[in-house]
Image 1: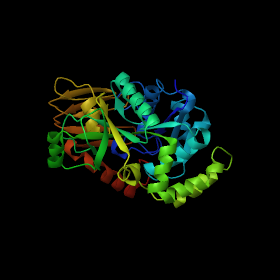
Image 2: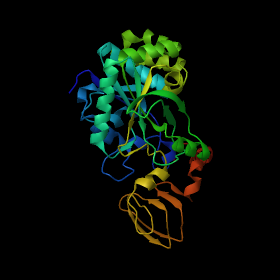
Image 3: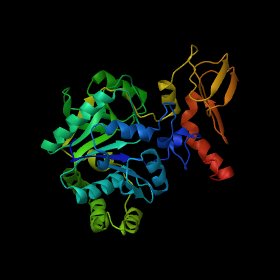
Image 4: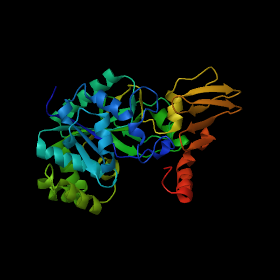
Length: 357
């Protein structure tokens, strides 16, 4: 393995769209929502462990999840878990990891990945990530991975590429489109889904931060001497209290002129909603999915019914519904209304506090 190759796993989100399974105390990345026997973050680690040595991983997460990270990835040392005092989106998260790696190994190639995505073809995935790492090692490039779209998906961002070569310069990034625009993207053939995976050298991403997010770069540069020491936590607390929340896409990738995309098709999904869980779950002859527990369904079709292990549910007369049961919360809503889950959370929090959130 290449000892200059590092993997940074971003694992600070709370996964609110998967409530009530995903909670503030144990969010989506630490759950086995697909009933595979492994959590999302564990699968992410094992996927990259094929190409990155264990000592070259960093996980950036909220400090309340530090012990959960070490529980799910016991191969890591505590020093490999970088703790954010508060979530500030992906740019500060990546800057924290980049300045940490620059101090440790200025020659590092940095692979940045979310902690909670699904990849079915890991061999093809690793091949593409390896090609990306080789490309950025020999070119002044910030690289991302784009997925060849199979449908006009409105839940993903899109990347427009300048050619149909596997590696192409990026024309532009587009946020989640409406259905009409997504259909236009598919017909055009120039657009890929944005997988949110980034590959670059530490030197190049630090240079990009200095150019496009100078305030963030200045803040993290000011604590460079504290990183990896006993004063790190206090220094990071100060920096995160001062830096603005911004995504790396908006802060850097949409502005830089050296951005490239590698297209791929390896069975990817960001598994961002209960709808995507339904899509990837095994279904019965009536198109019902039931990860966990045992479901007795009558006159029920096209529904997702998620139960705790060992629990039984009898369901009759539902069509196109989401049913999610936990020890203290039961969610029942039409599949087409799952975008309202965040509103449900707000109402529950307003009435009962955070006990069920």
